[in-house]
Image (cartoon, rainbow over all chains, first blue to last red; front, side, top):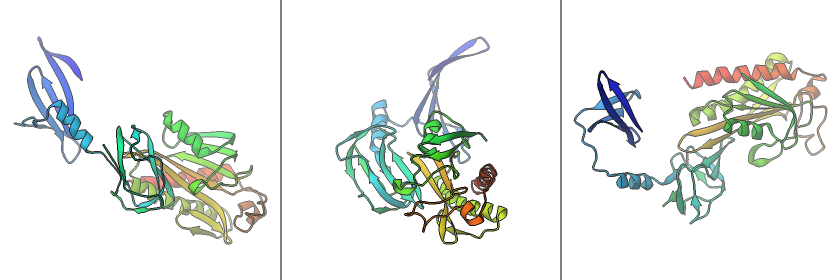
Length: 135
Length: 175
């Protein structure tokens, strides 16, 4: 996001970029400042922080690496809605998990192609178990 | 808390999901006099003729563990409303049915949509209040307040009692 602010007579070009979760870059003219969240969720400035050697492509790649859909809680997989090799998109329903009588529709948060389905229908799963891997 | 009342719906939970996706506020309640496609777990049907109390609540975004706790507490809240208002002895069939005299009188189903966090939560409650009689395939499994008491009850008052209880409990557990 780009914007301009004016303090006194001087104008500053501000550009904010979310490098990853918990790391925000704010460029003021040509100087970069980095912010992260502390344990209270407050934004704090990181002094002397070197930008990780991530170019934009690497950042994208890193995001792609985190492509597993995990079980949010213990329960039984009652239905699977995707097949190996299928392309899926954000918001798409991939499975139903039944837990203490709650019915949970598990959706994908990203784009990808199903590499492997790690569970079968009626299988009991624990919190954090990988259900589906994507590529 | 807004209660949207309909004379007939396919399912109050389906309607609640629709309006939640359109941006309805948490604690919006969808109630119907009758449902043509009321359902329970795994899509089993829920007998929903006129007289019963059928409603679904859009829950505020919460931790999944809190929703699980709330679902179980909902059965206790329904039981408590029965006990406090009528001379009946409800039995909580865990995790979330309520029985009277060995037959089901109310059922609760919470449905969530989950990605990295909980996106949407709907709690549906079907309560056999003023149902006069059940079809023969259900007659040994289900009962109603009307059958047990021999008289009508006030659906509106019961609904308000349950909503009040749920709100208090969610506040307590999510703190």
